[in-house]
Image 1 (tube, chains in turn green, purple):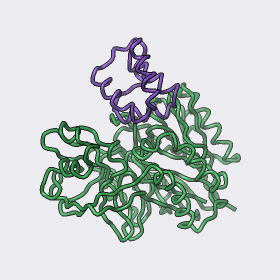
Image 2 (cartoon, each protein chain N blue to C red; image 1 turned 120 degrees about the horizontal axis):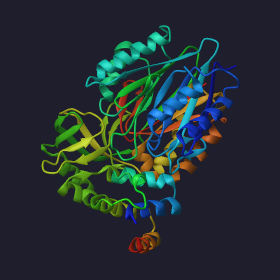
Image 3 (spheres, rainbow over the protein chains, first blue to last red; image 1 turned 90 degrees about the vertical axis):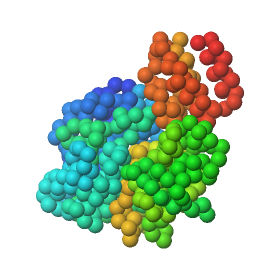
Image 4 (cartoon, chains in turn red, cyan; image 1 turned 135 degrees about the vertical axis):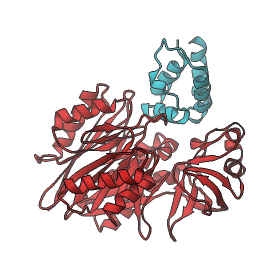
Length: 396
Length: 71
Protein backbone atom coordinates (compact mmCIF):
# COMPACT_ATOMS: atom_id res chain seq x y z
CA UNK A 1 0.00 0.00 0.00
CA UNK A 2 1.44 3.34 -0.98
CA UNK A 3 0.63 6.75 0.42
CA UNK A 4 1.90 8.66 -2.59
CA UNK A 5 0.40 8.79 -6.06
CA UNK A 6 2.21 10.38 -8.98
CA UNK A 7 1.84 10.77 -12.71
CA UNK A 8 4.02 12.43 -15.31
CA UNK A 9 3.74 13.73 -18.84
CA UNK A 10 5.95 15.48 -21.38
CA UNK A 11 5.35 17.15 -24.70
CA UNK A 12 7.40 18.71 -27.47
CA UNK A 13 4.44 20.35 -29.20
CA UNK A 14 5.19 23.81 -30.55
CA UNK A 15 2.01 25.39 -29.21
CA UNK A 16 2.40 26.03 -25.49
CA UNK A 17 -1.21 25.41 -24.50
CA UNK A 18 -1.22 22.16 -26.50
CA UNK A 19 2.09 21.08 -24.96
CA UNK A 20 0.81 21.68 -21.43
CA UNK A 21 -2.48 19.99 -22.28
CA UNK A 22 -0.71 16.89 -23.58
CA UNK A 23 1.66 16.73 -20.60
CA UNK A 24 -1.19 17.14 -18.09
CA UNK A 25 -3.32 14.53 -19.83
CA UNK A 26 -0.48 12.01 -19.68
CA UNK A 27 0.24 12.84 -16.05
CA UNK A 28 -3.40 12.47 -15.01
CA UNK A 29 -3.45 8.93 -16.39
CA UNK A 30 -0.89 7.99 -13.74
CA UNK A 31 -3.00 9.48 -10.94
CA UNK A 32 -5.62 6.74 -11.16
CA UNK A 33 -8.45 9.14 -10.51
CA UNK A 34 -6.83 10.89 -7.53
CA UNK A 35 -6.98 14.67 -7.60
CA UNK A 36 -3.54 16.28 -7.96
CA UNK A 37 -2.34 18.14 -4.86
CA UNK A 38 0.89 19.49 -6.36
CA UNK A 39 2.13 20.14 -9.91
CA UNK A 40 5.88 20.12 -10.45
CA UNK A 41 6.20 22.05 -13.72
CA UNK A 42 9.19 22.46 -16.00
CA UNK A 43 9.79 23.64 -19.55
CA UNK A 44 12.60 24.84 -21.75
CA UNK A 45 12.64 28.57 -22.45
CA UNK A 46 11.38 28.24 -26.01
CA UNK A 47 8.02 28.26 -24.22
CA UNK A 48 7.14 31.49 -22.40
CA UNK A 49 6.84 30.75 -18.68
CA UNK A 50 3.76 32.97 -18.33
CA UNK A 51 1.96 31.00 -21.06
CA UNK A 52 2.97 27.70 -19.49
CA UNK A 53 1.66 28.82 -16.11
CA UNK A 54 -1.58 30.09 -17.63
CA UNK A 55 -2.14 26.78 -19.41
CA UNK A 56 -1.38 24.82 -16.23
CA UNK A 57 -3.92 26.94 -14.37
CA UNK A 58 -6.55 26.29 -17.04
CA UNK A 59 -6.01 22.55 -16.84
CA UNK A 60 -5.40 22.08 -13.12
CA UNK A 61 -7.32 25.02 -11.62
CA UNK A 62 -6.01 25.81 -8.12
CA UNK A 63 -3.51 22.95 -7.71
CA UNK A 64 -0.33 24.36 -6.09
CA UNK A 65 2.44 24.87 -8.63
CA UNK A 66 6.18 24.39 -8.09
CA UNK A 67 9.07 24.19 -10.55
CA UNK A 68 11.68 25.85 -12.71
CA UNK A 69 12.68 26.13 -16.35
CA UNK A 70 15.23 23.56 -17.50
CA UNK A 71 18.10 23.84 -19.93
CA UNK A 72 18.35 21.61 -23.01
CA UNK A 73 15.31 19.38 -22.45
CA UNK A 74 13.13 17.43 -20.06
CA UNK A 75 14.70 14.22 -18.78
CA UNK A 76 13.01 11.02 -17.70
CA UNK A 77 13.08 7.26 -17.94
CA UNK A 78 12.00 7.75 -21.57
CA UNK A 79 15.25 9.59 -22.33
CA UNK A 80 15.29 13.28 -23.26
CA UNK A 81 12.22 15.20 -24.43
CA UNK A 82 13.59 17.96 -26.63
CA UNK A 83 12.26 19.61 -29.75
CA UNK A 84 12.91 22.54 -32.01
CA UNK A 85 10.06 24.38 -30.32
CA UNK A 86 10.98 23.34 -26.77
CA UNK A 87 9.62 20.85 -24.27
CA UNK A 88 7.26 20.79 -21.31
CA UNK A 89 7.22 18.32 -18.40
CA UNK A 90 4.75 17.97 -15.55
CA UNK A 91 4.87 15.66 -12.53
CA UNK A 92 1.69 15.50 -10.47
CA UNK A 93 1.57 14.36 -6.84
CA UNK A 94 -1.20 13.39 -4.45
CA UNK A 95 -0.89 12.03 -0.94
CA UNK A 96 -3.29 9.74 0.92
CA UNK A 97 -3.44 8.30 4.44
CA UNK A 98 -1.47 11.04 6.13
CA UNK A 99 0.83 12.09 3.30
CA UNK A 100 0.42 15.73 2.39
CA UNK A 101 2.19 18.03 -0.03
CA UNK A 102 2.45 21.79 -0.19
CA UNK A 103 4.44 24.60 -1.73
CA UNK A 104 5.81 27.99 -0.73
CA UNK A 105 7.77 30.61 -2.60
CA UNK A 106 9.38 34.03 -2.38
CA UNK A 107 11.01 36.56 -4.61
CA UNK A 108 14.72 37.15 -4.06
CA UNK A 109 15.21 40.88 -3.75
CA UNK A 110 18.92 40.90 -2.97
CA UNK A 111 18.52 38.99 0.30
CA UNK A 112 18.64 35.25 -0.30
CA UNK A 113 18.40 34.33 3.36
CA UNK A 114 15.22 36.36 3.83
CA UNK A 115 13.72 34.81 0.70
CA UNK A 116 14.52 31.30 1.90
CA UNK A 117 12.98 32.02 5.29
CA UNK A 118 9.85 33.52 3.73
CA UNK A 119 9.35 30.61 1.32
CA UNK A 120 9.81 28.08 4.10
CA UNK A 121 7.34 29.90 6.33
CA UNK A 122 4.79 29.90 3.50
CA UNK A 123 5.41 26.20 2.92
CA UNK A 124 4.87 25.43 6.62
CA UNK A 125 1.67 27.47 6.65
CA UNK A 126 0.36 25.58 3.64
CA UNK A 127 1.13 22.16 5.10
CA UNK A 128 -0.74 23.11 8.26
CA UNK A 129 2.50 23.27 10.21
CA UNK A 130 3.53 19.74 9.26
CA UNK A 131 7.31 19.40 9.02
CA UNK A 132 8.25 17.99 5.59
CA UNK A 133 10.15 14.73 5.29
CA UNK A 134 11.95 16.28 2.33
CA UNK A 135 11.82 19.61 0.53
CA UNK A 136 12.11 20.03 -3.22
CA UNK A 137 14.24 23.17 -3.55
CA UNK A 138 14.32 25.15 -6.78
CA UNK A 139 15.65 28.68 -7.11
CA UNK A 140 17.04 31.07 -9.65
CA UNK A 141 20.85 31.04 -9.85
CA UNK A 142 22.98 33.40 -7.78
CA UNK A 143 22.30 33.22 -4.05
CA UNK A 144 21.47 29.57 -3.41
CA UNK A 145 23.76 29.28 -0.36
CA UNK A 146 21.95 32.14 1.35
CA UNK A 147 18.52 30.83 0.38
CA UNK A 148 19.40 27.43 1.84
CA UNK A 149 20.51 29.13 5.06
CA UNK A 150 17.17 30.92 5.28
CA UNK A 151 15.25 27.69 4.71
CA UNK A 152 17.29 26.03 7.47
CA UNK A 153 16.28 28.72 9.96
CA UNK A 154 12.64 27.65 9.56
CA UNK A 155 13.12 23.96 8.72
CA UNK A 156 16.31 22.90 10.51
CA UNK A 157 17.67 19.51 9.51
CA UNK A 158 15.07 18.95 6.80
CA UNK A 159 16.90 17.55 3.76
CA UNK A 160 16.52 19.34 0.44
CA UNK A 161 16.80 18.05 -3.08
CA UNK A 162 16.91 20.37 -6.03
CA UNK A 163 18.46 22.41 -8.76
CA UNK A 164 18.68 25.95 -10.02
CA UNK A 165 16.57 27.39 -12.83
CA UNK A 166 18.19 27.34 -16.24
CA UNK A 167 17.85 28.50 -19.82
CA UNK A 168 19.76 27.56 -22.96
CA UNK A 169 21.94 30.59 -23.69
CA UNK A 170 22.90 31.39 -20.06
CA UNK A 171 21.15 34.70 -20.69
CA UNK A 172 19.02 35.03 -17.56
CA UNK A 173 15.87 33.86 -19.35
CA UNK A 174 15.07 31.29 -16.63
CA UNK A 175 11.98 31.27 -14.42
CA UNK A 176 10.82 29.77 -11.14
CA UNK A 177 7.24 28.45 -11.22
CA UNK A 178 5.05 29.24 -8.24
CA UNK A 179 1.35 29.03 -7.48
CA UNK A 180 1.04 32.76 -8.15
CA UNK A 181 2.91 32.65 -11.46
CA UNK A 182 6.45 32.48 -12.77
CA UNK A 183 9.15 34.73 -11.29
CA UNK A 184 12.57 35.40 -12.74
CA UNK A 185 14.44 35.77 -9.46
CA UNK A 186 13.03 33.69 -6.65
CA UNK A 187 12.74 30.39 -4.86
CA UNK A 188 10.02 27.76 -4.74
CA UNK A 189 9.86 24.98 -2.17
CA UNK A 190 7.64 21.91 -2.25
CA UNK A 191 7.36 19.85 0.90
CA UNK A 192 6.29 16.23 1.15
CA UNK A 193 5.04 15.43 4.63
CA UNK A 194 3.94 12.34 6.49
CA UNK A 195 4.64 8.62 6.14
CA UNK A 196 6.37 8.63 2.76
CA UNK A 197 9.44 6.55 1.92
CA UNK A 198 12.34 8.48 0.45
CA UNK A 199 15.82 7.77 -0.75
CA UNK A 200 18.21 10.38 -2.10
CA UNK A 201 21.64 10.52 -3.69
CA UNK A 202 23.77 13.52 -4.58
CA UNK A 203 27.08 13.03 -6.29
CA UNK A 204 29.62 14.70 -8.51
CA UNK A 205 31.32 11.97 -10.55
CA UNK A 206 34.86 13.30 -10.48
CA UNK A 207 38.11 12.14 -8.92
CA UNK A 208 40.61 14.22 -7.01
CA UNK A 209 43.96 15.05 -8.62
CA UNK A 210 47.17 15.98 -6.80
CA UNK A 211 46.89 19.59 -7.95
CA UNK A 212 46.06 21.69 -4.87
CA UNK A 213 45.26 25.39 -4.81
CA UNK A 214 44.67 27.78 -1.93
CA UNK A 215 42.03 30.46 -2.35
CA UNK A 216 43.69 33.74 -1.38
CA UNK A 217 41.03 36.29 -2.36
CA UNK A 218 37.36 36.14 -3.33
CA UNK A 219 34.37 38.41 -3.90
CA UNK A 220 31.11 36.46 -3.85
CA UNK A 221 31.36 33.80 -6.53
CA UNK A 222 34.44 35.35 -8.11
CA UNK A 223 37.77 33.81 -7.16
CA UNK A 224 40.18 36.69 -7.49
CA UNK A 225 43.36 34.83 -6.69
CA UNK A 226 44.68 31.33 -6.10
CA UNK A 227 48.02 30.88 -4.35
CA UNK A 228 48.40 34.67 -4.46
CA UNK A 229 48.15 34.96 -8.26
CA UNK A 230 45.25 35.78 -10.59
CA UNK A 231 42.90 32.78 -10.49
CA UNK A 232 42.39 32.61 -14.27
CA UNK A 233 46.14 32.49 -14.88
CA UNK A 234 46.59 29.68 -12.34
CA UNK A 235 43.73 27.68 -13.88
CA UNK A 236 45.23 28.28 -17.33
CA UNK A 237 48.54 26.77 -16.19
CA UNK A 238 46.66 23.65 -15.06
CA UNK A 239 44.46 23.22 -18.14
CA UNK A 240 46.90 24.45 -20.80
CA UNK A 241 45.80 24.88 -24.41
CA UNK A 242 42.15 24.16 -23.61
CA UNK A 243 41.65 27.66 -22.19
CA UNK A 244 44.70 29.51 -23.50
CA UNK A 245 42.56 31.90 -25.57
CA UNK A 246 40.21 32.70 -22.67
CA UNK A 247 43.13 33.36 -20.32
CA UNK A 248 44.61 35.78 -22.85
CA UNK A 249 41.42 37.52 -23.96
CA UNK A 250 38.87 36.69 -21.27
CA UNK A 251 35.82 34.55 -21.94
CA UNK A 252 33.50 31.68 -21.15
CA UNK A 253 35.25 28.43 -20.12
CA UNK A 254 32.20 26.35 -19.18
CA UNK A 255 32.60 23.79 -21.94
CA UNK A 256 36.35 23.45 -21.46
CA UNK A 257 36.10 22.89 -17.69
CA UNK A 258 33.04 20.67 -17.39
CA UNK A 259 35.28 17.63 -16.85
CA UNK A 260 37.69 19.59 -14.65
CA UNK A 261 35.88 21.18 -11.70
CA UNK A 262 37.55 22.63 -8.67
CA UNK A 263 36.75 20.75 -5.48
CA UNK A 264 36.47 21.77 -1.84
CA UNK A 265 36.57 18.86 0.59
CA UNK A 266 33.56 18.97 2.92
CA UNK A 267 33.83 15.52 4.49
CA UNK A 268 35.91 12.35 4.09
CA UNK A 269 33.87 11.31 1.10
CA UNK A 270 32.36 14.49 -0.29
CA UNK A 271 33.85 17.31 -2.33
CA UNK A 272 31.83 20.44 -3.08
CA UNK A 273 32.41 20.90 -6.80
CA UNK A 274 32.75 24.30 -8.47
CA UNK A 275 32.36 24.86 -12.21
CA UNK A 276 34.82 27.48 -13.56
CA UNK A 277 32.58 29.65 -15.73
CA UNK A 278 34.33 32.77 -16.98
CA UNK A 279 37.77 34.36 -16.93
CA UNK A 280 37.74 38.15 -16.76
CA UNK A 281 39.72 40.03 -19.37
CA UNK A 282 42.38 42.23 -17.76
CA UNK A 283 42.54 41.15 -14.12
CA UNK A 284 42.06 37.41 -14.89
CA UNK A 285 39.63 36.80 -12.07
CA UNK A 286 37.63 33.59 -12.27
CA UNK A 287 33.85 33.31 -11.88
CA UNK A 288 32.43 30.06 -10.54
CA UNK A 289 28.81 29.06 -9.76
CA UNK A 290 29.19 28.52 -6.01
CA UNK A 291 30.83 30.37 -3.16
CA UNK A 292 34.21 29.70 -1.58
CA UNK A 293 36.18 31.74 0.93
CA UNK A 294 39.73 33.00 1.25
CA UNK A 295 41.74 30.29 2.98
CA UNK A 296 39.83 27.39 1.45
CA UNK A 297 42.03 24.67 0.04
CA UNK A 298 40.82 23.53 -3.40
CA UNK A 299 41.92 20.72 -5.62
CA UNK A 300 41.57 20.21 -9.36
CA UNK A 301 39.26 17.30 -10.10
CA UNK A 302 38.79 15.30 -13.27
CA UNK A 303 36.09 13.22 -14.87
CA UNK A 304 35.05 11.68 -18.16
CA UNK A 305 32.01 11.54 -20.40
CA UNK A 306 31.58 7.86 -19.60
CA UNK A 307 31.78 8.67 -15.91
CA UNK A 308 28.99 11.23 -16.20
CA UNK A 309 26.79 8.64 -17.90
CA UNK A 310 27.61 5.66 -15.69
CA UNK A 311 26.99 7.84 -12.63
CA UNK A 312 23.27 7.44 -13.36
CA UNK A 313 23.54 3.81 -12.29
CA UNK A 314 25.40 4.77 -9.10
CA UNK A 315 22.77 7.41 -8.46
CA UNK A 316 19.97 4.84 -8.59
CA UNK A 317 21.90 2.35 -6.42
CA UNK A 318 22.66 5.00 -3.84
CA UNK A 319 19.14 6.44 -3.68
CA UNK A 320 17.54 3.00 -3.37
CA UNK A 321 20.01 2.08 -0.65
CA UNK A 322 19.46 5.35 1.19
CA UNK A 323 15.72 4.73 1.28
CA UNK A 324 15.96 1.01 1.98
CA UNK A 325 13.82 0.61 -1.11
CA UNK A 326 13.52 -1.76 -4.04
CA UNK A 327 12.77 -0.45 -7.50
CA UNK A 328 9.20 -1.69 -7.19
CA UNK A 329 8.73 0.47 -4.07
CA UNK A 330 9.38 3.67 -6.03
CA UNK A 331 6.31 5.74 -6.90
CA UNK A 332 8.05 8.84 -8.26
CA UNK A 333 11.46 10.36 -8.75
CA UNK A 334 13.04 13.75 -9.33
CA UNK A 335 16.34 13.74 -11.22
CA UNK A 336 18.70 16.70 -11.22
CA UNK A 337 21.40 16.59 -13.92
CA UNK A 338 23.74 19.57 -14.19
CA UNK A 339 23.25 21.27 -17.56
CA UNK A 340 27.02 21.51 -18.00
CA UNK A 341 27.29 17.74 -17.58
CA UNK A 342 24.35 17.18 -19.93
CA UNK A 343 25.93 19.42 -22.55
CA UNK A 344 29.18 17.48 -22.27
CA UNK A 345 27.68 14.02 -22.73
CA UNK A 346 25.29 15.27 -25.42
CA UNK A 347 23.17 12.80 -27.34
CA UNK A 348 24.38 9.84 -25.27
CA UNK A 349 22.34 11.05 -22.31
CA UNK A 350 19.02 9.81 -23.67
CA UNK A 351 20.23 6.24 -24.07
CA UNK A 352 21.91 6.31 -20.66
CA UNK A 353 18.67 7.41 -19.01
CA UNK A 354 16.78 4.58 -20.69
CA UNK A 355 19.48 2.09 -19.76
CA UNK A 356 20.09 3.06 -16.14
CA UNK A 357 16.77 4.41 -14.89
CA UNK A 358 13.92 2.74 -16.71
CA UNK A 359 14.71 -0.91 -15.90
CA UNK A 360 15.53 -0.18 -12.27
CA UNK A 361 12.59 1.90 -11.12
CA UNK A 362 9.60 -0.28 -11.86
CA UNK A 363 7.99 2.10 -14.32
CA UNK A 364 7.75 4.93 -11.81
CA UNK A 365 7.58 8.43 -13.31
CA UNK A 366 10.83 10.41 -13.01
CA UNK A 367 10.97 14.10 -13.88
CA UNK A 368 14.49 15.20 -14.76
CA UNK A 369 15.85 18.72 -15.11
CA UNK A 370 19.10 20.14 -16.50
CA UNK A 371 20.07 22.79 -13.99
CA UNK A 372 22.50 25.67 -13.42
CA UNK A 373 23.43 24.58 -9.86
CA UNK A 374 22.47 21.64 -7.71
CA UNK A 375 21.38 21.32 -4.09
CA UNK A 376 21.28 18.24 -1.90
CA UNK A 377 21.83 16.83 1.54
CA UNK A 378 25.21 15.36 2.42
CA UNK A 379 25.45 13.22 5.53
CA UNK A 380 27.50 14.98 8.21
CA UNK A 381 27.54 18.22 6.23
CA UNK A 382 23.89 19.18 5.70
CA UNK A 383 22.21 20.89 2.78
CA UNK A 384 24.68 22.32 0.29
CA UNK A 385 24.81 23.99 -3.11
CA UNK A 386 27.39 23.01 -5.70
CA UNK A 387 27.98 22.55 -9.44
CA UNK A 388 28.50 19.78 -12.00
CA UNK A 389 26.48 17.44 -9.85
CA UNK A 390 23.76 14.82 -10.22
CA UNK A 391 20.98 14.23 -7.73
CA UNK A 392 18.14 11.72 -7.52
CA UNK A 393 15.24 11.67 -5.08
CA UNK A 394 13.07 8.58 -5.04
CA UNK A 395 9.72 8.59 -3.26
CA UNK A 396 7.61 5.58 -2.35
CA UNK B 1 19.86 33.83 -46.39
CA UNK B 2 20.97 33.88 -42.74
CA UNK B 3 24.03 31.70 -42.18
CA UNK B 4 23.05 31.20 -38.55
CA UNK B 5 19.63 29.94 -39.63
CA UNK B 6 21.28 27.61 -42.15
CA UNK B 7 23.56 26.22 -39.43
CA UNK B 8 20.64 25.72 -37.06
CA UNK B 9 18.58 23.89 -39.66
CA UNK B 10 21.56 21.71 -40.58
CA UNK B 11 22.33 20.71 -36.98
CA UNK B 12 18.65 20.07 -36.29
CA UNK B 13 18.29 17.83 -39.35
CA UNK B 14 21.61 15.98 -39.11
CA UNK B 15 21.66 15.65 -35.34
CA UNK B 16 18.86 16.59 -32.91
CA UNK B 17 17.10 19.53 -31.31
CA UNK B 18 19.10 18.65 -28.20
CA UNK B 19 22.32 19.32 -30.16
CA UNK B 20 21.01 22.73 -31.23
CA UNK B 21 20.32 23.49 -27.56
CA UNK B 22 23.87 22.40 -26.69
CA UNK B 23 25.18 24.76 -29.37
CA UNK B 24 23.12 27.59 -27.88
CA UNK B 25 24.50 26.82 -24.41
CA UNK B 26 28.09 26.65 -25.67
CA UNK B 27 27.89 29.97 -27.53
CA UNK B 28 25.21 32.04 -25.80
CA UNK B 29 23.70 32.69 -29.24
CA UNK B 30 19.90 32.36 -29.38
CA UNK B 31 19.97 30.39 -32.60
CA UNK B 32 16.27 29.59 -32.70
CA UNK B 33 15.46 33.28 -33.05
CA UNK B 34 17.15 33.41 -36.46
CA UNK B 35 14.87 33.11 -39.50
CA UNK B 36 15.97 32.72 -43.15
CA UNK B 37 15.80 36.51 -43.56
CA UNK B 38 17.53 37.46 -40.30
CA UNK B 39 20.63 39.61 -40.41
CA UNK B 40 23.54 37.64 -38.99
CA UNK B 41 25.50 39.09 -36.09
CA UNK B 42 29.16 38.74 -37.09
CA UNK B 43 30.39 37.98 -33.56
CA UNK B 44 27.62 35.46 -33.01
CA UNK B 45 28.49 33.71 -36.29
CA UNK B 46 32.15 33.56 -35.27
CA UNK B 47 31.28 31.98 -31.90
CA UNK B 48 29.02 29.40 -33.50
CA UNK B 49 31.57 28.48 -36.18
CA UNK B 50 34.20 28.01 -33.46
CA UNK B 51 31.91 25.71 -31.48
CA UNK B 52 30.75 23.50 -34.37
CA UNK B 53 33.83 21.20 -34.51
CA UNK B 54 32.95 19.97 -31.03
CA UNK B 55 29.53 18.83 -32.23
CA UNK B 56 29.85 17.72 -35.86
CA UNK B 57 31.99 15.19 -37.73
CA UNK B 58 34.60 16.53 -40.21
CA UNK B 59 32.53 15.39 -43.21
CA UNK B 60 29.49 17.20 -41.78
CA UNK B 61 31.55 20.36 -41.29
CA UNK B 62 32.63 20.14 -44.90
CA UNK B 63 29.04 19.66 -46.09
CA UNK B 64 27.89 22.58 -43.97
CA UNK B 65 30.70 24.73 -45.35
CA UNK B 66 29.39 24.17 -48.88
CA UNK B 67 25.84 25.02 -47.79
CA UNK B 68 27.06 28.23 -46.19
CA UNK B 69 28.86 29.25 -49.36
CA UNK B 70 25.51 29.08 -51.15
CA UNK B 71 23.66 30.90 -48.36
